[in-house]
View 1 (cartoon, rainbow, N blue to C red):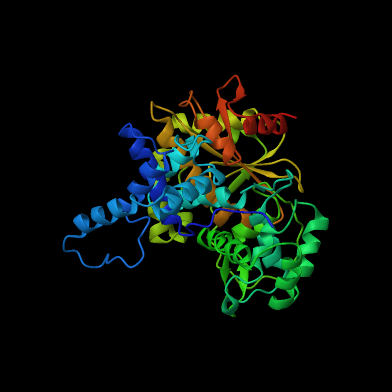
View 2 (view 1 turned 90 degrees about the vertical axis):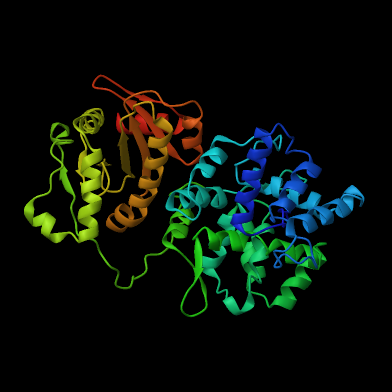
Amino acid sequence: MKNFPHQHNQFSKLRGTLEAIRDLNASHLDPSDDGVLGKELALRHIHRFRHFDYDTANDLEERLLTRIAFEETKSSSTQGMRTAARENRKTLRHLGWLESNGAALTPVGDALLDTIQQSAEELALLQPAIAQIVVSDSDGNVSHPVLHLLRLVDQITFHDDDGYDGMELALEARDDSEEEFQRIVKLATLSKAERHEQLTKTGVTKSKIDNAKKILPAFAVNAKLMFVDAGGRYSLTQVGEQYLKGRYGGLAVEKPTEPKGRVHTRTSTACETTDPLKVGRSRAFSAATRRALSGSEQQAAADLLYERTNQHQALVRNTARHCGDRKFMEDPASYDLLVESRPNDPIDLIEAKTIHNDSRRQIRTAIGQLFDYEHFVVSPTFPDHTVIKSIVVDDDVDEGLPHFLDALDIGLLLVSEMSMIPLNKRGEMIVNRLQT
């Protein structure tokens, strides 16, 4: 069974650790030093001492400094705050938010701290980071444990009453092969006692089993990849299902089509054409469409119409011109452009941003919009299509943003009337698709 850091399963504490690392760097202190970072985590209450009164405000800071000083008299190997620093750094590296040196934030980590806590933008960065976690063993075998976890939850009944029992098997898989997955499925169908007996025969200890189910299932729930349904059963969210199908990368698993319950549908405001010259024209709503929208939808539409200037619409129009013979769809209440090639092909969801020395802010906004439109608008409308996301811009963007978008599987394209130029690796794939 593979290892995964098991210090904290609360995302707020991991984000707090990332903030601490950023602030230590700004103060010219070394966050890769366990003692330096550990003390900072204790001061921020991210690492909390046992049997210490945090509830009494009187002299809390002074008492905490005294407790930290006492902790520092212990040997390094027995200091809990040092362990917290070391394990949290490992977790942040697994999530792709911290460089391998343990001191510098990655572009994705920087972007995460620019989001508001518990916002849609934060969740849009959290979901791919968790779903695409990679772990390896001493023999070099590599697997994606969260994707294995989603497959298990999809096929095996796990009840909330049992906690996360059985979900430790996500770290038992040696690799991503079907053979390995079927092996852990067989283990998952055993009783808890039988499963533990089989695992201990291979040298897996009880503490390792307990640690293996402590973190990743909680991550998947916090990232809204799975949830507990009304019957107390763990089930996948729509986003979790999309990761399972390979829409966001990782293991592509085809699920049988099942009848869905009645769902709320939004008013359709989309229009389509096969003529790229008709794309990116007026974004005004007809009177009938305005009456069909709710007050909140009208306000959202008004905000979008304000954003979409003539320059923005020219960018959308130029994008369509470079896509050849395809079907184009626009929706003034949500997405800028959908491009459909053939009935069973992936569908391209494109967000256009005009850049005026504000590329970081514009890209950050576009990311949130893409994930929102994909989840709430495009996927329900085109349930059988993989959605490929990209951002088109009319000027260069800040260094680091193209790589950041690659990490999110979002293409970045520089578009003018004369050309469509990919700015990242994902963009190269998208341009090749759209221009063939």
